[in-house]
Image 1 (tube, rainbow, N blue to C red):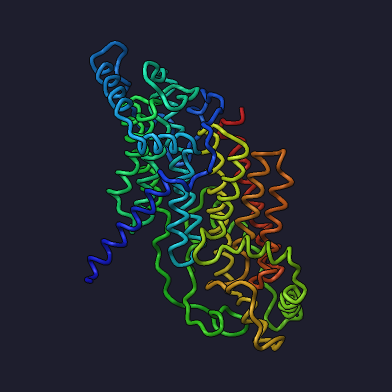
Image 2 (cartoon, one colour):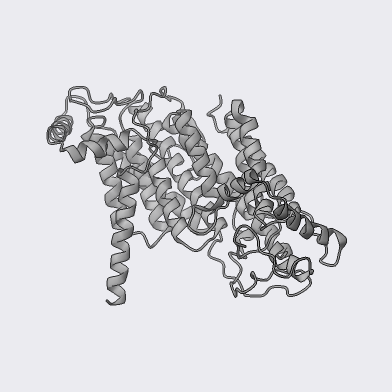
Length: 479
């Protein structure tokens, strides 16, 4: 089997995986359509990359009584009358789950399949969520400009929803997400992603909830929004190349015993940020010197934590582990938030806003944590415990990652996530802050971070989370 055939087979397999994520059974498991209220103000909310909700021109829908409208209605009826059982299942799957979730599921699967790189994952989740949010805001601007009523004279499988029909928000999200995913993950076949976006949009026509012109306009608008986000992403500095220089000895980072791994994303602390002025805005103070009593005490605390590990601590360490083969720590927070959103139904614009704020905060937390990691190059507990002679054969509960310890990226992600979620859902503020603390502590219980990594990372993340809260208060959705 030649290399090209292997590559083609891999792309076919990946395409099948993406299709399953979009139209199969890996969504929320909720079989009830959304009953969220209308969102007439969503088209006035502040986007992240688009200069305004009006930046992308949206042509008007077919004029009432026109030949174009008659053709549109005739096409809708033909599709509805030709429904197959499989088409009905797909239509219901698309309409009955949170429209953004299947596209995040695709990203989760690709991140899990790649080499472990949490900061790149947080960048990707941020860009994907911003594209879906900006496209949704632009769509709602057009919806309430044109105020086109949803189809009425058709046998609909689901209720159309309380907002105007044109353009389709499901199609907008599909158009934006599919193009950004193709940019972020070249191993995904771009034509296949386009086809899947069109199938997701067409499912709304099959369901009788949107006219064909609603979905065509939605796909076009979403793809234009994606182009703006991709142009932004190409300028964020994430393609800078490391020169290979790093400190050696005296407590400086080395790969785990028995490994020759290179450090992961050493320049990520220089990437552009969404909320901070730069990655170093909240840089933590220097770590204790390797010959200090405090350094030795930090290493001993990790040894003691493992020796006294409780079953509850081990469960928490494994839940938050975010190792190779998972969506990584920022993806775990996305899954926690998506599960919460299933229990606390939101309109599509508000769900998009939650995920954009969450993932922008986490993206900045990743940059800030990586700035500190490669400013100080602190070695991991596994190496330090052995080098100090505390235990020459010591092993952590979790696998040691291939990047420096200080500060904990997971603690930074968690502090940011906990603060923005506490603001967005004040009745659950105590819960989210407690989960952030648990996630930070879980890295010490897992043996891959010192206590100081967690406390400083959590502090850093909370500062970034507060910046996200300030942005949320000004974006127009809380008026």
